[in-house]
Image (cartoon, rainbow, N blue to C red):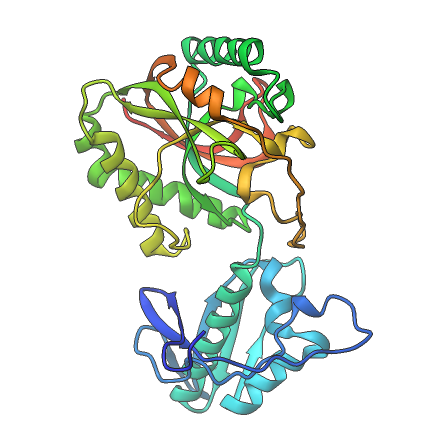
Length: 357
């Protein structure tokens, strides 16, 4: 990262500079990556976006955060909390581990309270970005016609291309889990799940109803493409999904949902547009049938893991099945799906949804 072009962190609709730091390292201590060891010199300037109330003893501001992130504000041996308090001349009260509540900042000076609040928000954002994704917004593609089309595709590929390097039954998607992902989420509490449900409902009322015209979107799943740039070394093969009427309404809908969730901070901005695709083959499935694409690089406790994968030669598959027709279906619901959890039908468990009709 260049000194003159530092990373920007967006919090509550405002951008903050995250200045480069020299991180310290500690020998013989466990889980050092769970705590912040760097300078606290970033994003200190007073900010009127925060609600700060005046009290008889000075000023007060509160921060809502999931209990899972409290430890990052406390720091090892309480060092992070003490450092913020000392440098901003404030007192910070944090709920005990496992207890939900608010982080309360008090101090004699308004600017000091705002500075502490800003630093806490930057820490929360930094460590939230290190958490593994827990949920995702998606359309389920589990109608019978499409599932049968997928099974036909799998059968024909194995019949005609099983001699190609790396092609076998283990790398095919579970047909019950076929889906279109709109965006990945980190939801660390029931309150954040409820917030996501409310945001999805707002999207429905403000623009989804107009785009969908209050009816399911009729789409076709047809044609295949691959993710990387070498058809002889493919890791992910996906089916394309498009509107039957040739319109751009599905793309417009998912892009506006993504934009709204990015603006709220619920989805980290990586892309400006959703790449509509339904994964049908993935080499991660070879060793783990429950793997979930590139988003499966972290364990449940946030540790990075390396998944060695054997690519497959997709040249014949792409040539023979370039325009394969999987079937048509009606998209009528957007789901908040929970990763690594299935319902009684074998699909991803849904924590909430909106329906178009």
